[in-house]
Image (cartoon, rainbow, N blue to C red; front, side):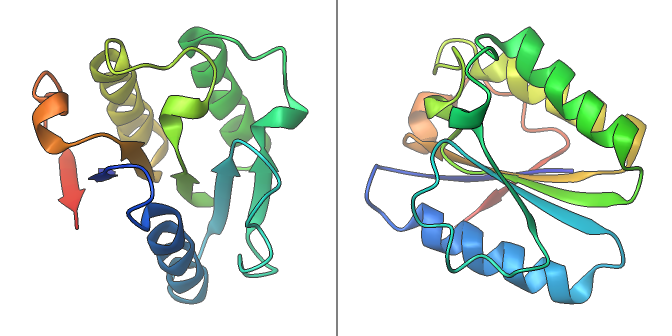
Length: 140
């Protein structure tokens, strides 16, 4: 399942993602991963959540490399149950234009690997009209 949290920049999506990740870390049996662009605002993420900052991986520059990174993460740890991706439009070359294809690939990865994705997108729902929401949940 791919869960999407949308809204304009500054609307509290990061805090909601952190709260949801901390909740999942307590409830799920597998591992939880939280991916951010920078090291900012990671102090409130629970200690047992694996936090990854994409600034530490500057060679990941496009969606193919990003998806490969996610598959690599799973191949090294089959116990990953949830992956939170905060502010996806700040990662690699992911943009409003190519987000539908990226989300389709996340849905495939989710189904193949049994991972629940939580993705925050700084955009209004109307801007995301090209995303096939089958297999997705919109979070508020």
